[in-house]
Length: 580
Image 1 (cartoon, rainbow, N blue to C red):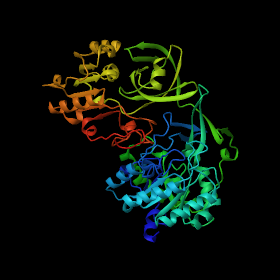
Image 2: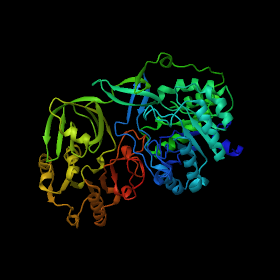
Image 3: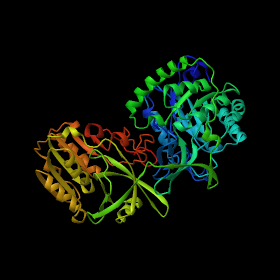
Image 4: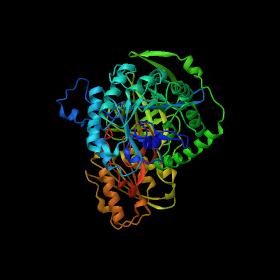
């Protein structure tokens, strides 16, 4: 590692260095966030254990991994300390898809590729990355700890000699920076000498703590995953300080920093870089960029104020931790109250495959916002996003296991809800001349909008056939519209927009229909920023942390309602994160 390159990456007494944590922001297009370097989501070859090198898709990095289905994340407070627990399951688009994204990147932030796998897989991935995109890559982070995969996953280990051997092999292969990401359940000081001897440039202290989350109201498990957030700060400070006294191996501090003062404490403990993660929750990429600019300045100011030496001690919860055994792994157990309990009071069958679920308590929200709705089937937790159709209802179309289970609910059954999330429909339409165009279940949020925001509404709805018509919903639309038209057919007749004279056009339904409506509305003279679409997307967390919903921006925060001016540039990703 050249000295001048190392200065760009690690604290050397002039400014505090920052990066994201692997799994946060994820995609290289978001690398330019006023960070000193950017770490990608963890990438693997993604073949089942024992896959042969003769499998060309596997060995050439073409396979993808979808990870777990929701619920994959929860948020809460333990004795006043904020935390997140994630169970993403390492979804990733594979080597070749990540290479494409790296090649497309035109920015100047140094890129670190996070990798997981066995010895041969790690070497193979580095060779593939170096061959195709090596000029844009500064180094690699080897992820040896992931608490949201199976407990027996052989790719993750805390055995010093095994990791040391891997580092030596990779150091022979590539003359670039190598990080090793450790489990927080180990004493990092025990690894520093071996890692430095093997040729590592830095150790990341550390990954997330294995944790099981129980819903307070039902007593049932939501997820088992990795604990992160402010709750880990004191433990990471103590672990870092002990490790820093062994030698001068660089330390990437990853665990609970939320404020500039806490970043200064991490540097005092011996950190050379601060990795930021859950502090980004709820922030858009633009907001994160501004946050990072100020954060670095303020952190350095705070550091200069700290004159005395500080001895960091393990927090009480670490010394008195209660571990439970789950599938051969020790996990911390937390009781969480984020998903509030609601009682189903009425089920309204809207059509052959769609029902409206009415529950007992109202939720304050903006029309168009969504909820994350949780229930259990045979002890299996299932969670999906649903747009509110009123203050105390959601309308659900049967599409998969979760929606099927919701449509089978009966009065007095319980559901568990967090939210609302997203931006909803703009209140600026109040008093304006507005056209609503809905397709199928996409019409369900319109009565809620019409009730909350007073405007002159003309409504057009379309359904594939008579069986799909939302009967109760249509009656509300007809009653609240100054003009109403309903259409039956597989393609919405966009010619009905000819000579339209509206201040806003709002559309919700199948995406091909919305795109066609948006294009026609603009053609008829409606400005692109006044044409609004409510997009359906793969939303897993709702916090703006996992970026599963990325389409050019994280739609769990900036959507689901967006303008055609933005949406026309959007791309799509599949469940692994690969661009379609």
